[in-house]
Length: 482
Image (cartoon, rainbow, N blue to C red; front, side, top):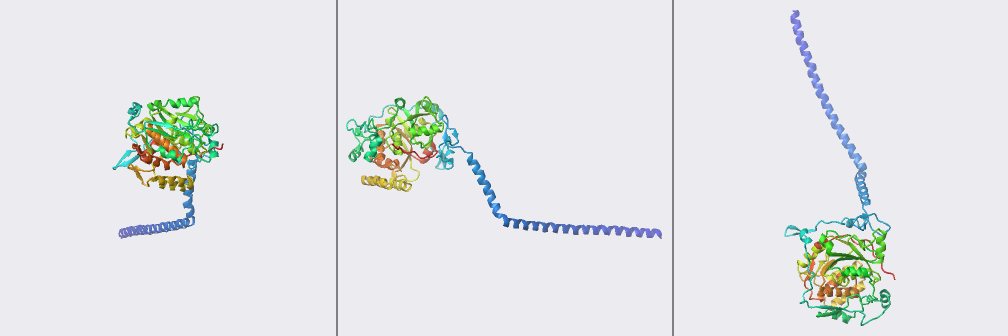
């Protein structure tokens, strides 16, 4: 009996032991469910808290990252250098005592300094270089033809008018003569009459024209030592900075052959010399700063510094009398290609005597005249005088000339020195003296009037961008005051 009871109790105990386990599991499940429900409620509360916090402080969330970005950019800009260029190579310095440097507005342009990467464009779906130079090994052995020009040219001889036959104002300075007569014609230019202007466009075997350097008293004085150097040049790359307006950028990208065969000449006045010396750019005992031969010009002929700059720009054949080729580069740019290669690519390869860029924005002289007035580059009155004369002479409003744009941008000019191109440049110079200094208005007119100059290479804007690194003008040139 007792055994039986024991067994029953065992069973009972066995059952009672199982029940708590099952209940325990149920309790665990219940507790787990409650725990899960609590987590969900916690997340909901957390989400609501975040939403309330965002609604309250969303302005800070938006503006704090923006403020941090501005601070970062300001710090980065503050570390960028000024635009002063070292005398040997284009190392930059912090802005010095010339307080009119514009570091913020010119930082983008400064980033172009010393760049040699090619400019490209897409032709027929294929990306190509805008300027295709010969390979480096060919450039080293390139020989430009330096022989005399063909005798078949329509103009065989140029005679430059001087004061030897028609002197006036002898002994007076150019600037004072200019002020007395209230005109831009002076002892440097000679007083070209409208009748002489009209005759100058007629092509004869011997052309008699005004072309600057009219009188010994006309100004633009250069030392005998510098004259001797320039007379030795067969190929010249030139630039100028008058009135302290721009810094000096060393040319880059040239071959060893070009360094031996090409003259690099920068024309300065005494204002620019003083400004550059303040920045530590001093001329060496040999007359050079880096690769540039610095030629100091005294007694500039014009009060308008832009007009003074037209002399080395348009009359290199008068400054380099024995040069066969020349390349002009505006002082706002850094020349960055091999000059012998550029002459081969833009003149010899295309059978051209002059290469100049097409205008990037406009195609008509008349549209350009409106832009000049709108941008305050010249007064409406002087532009009106010029455009009225051009209309009277019959200059068409066509936007195309010989298959290219009828308007050019003249910051880079590559040319062979022939009697025809020399004549073209003289007539162009006379127009900027007579009318406005905006040479883009007068070049198409002179080209149209002098119809015998056919082989002009008006290259696209992307080629010009490949030739130079553009830095823009650094500061406004100071006009002459005496």
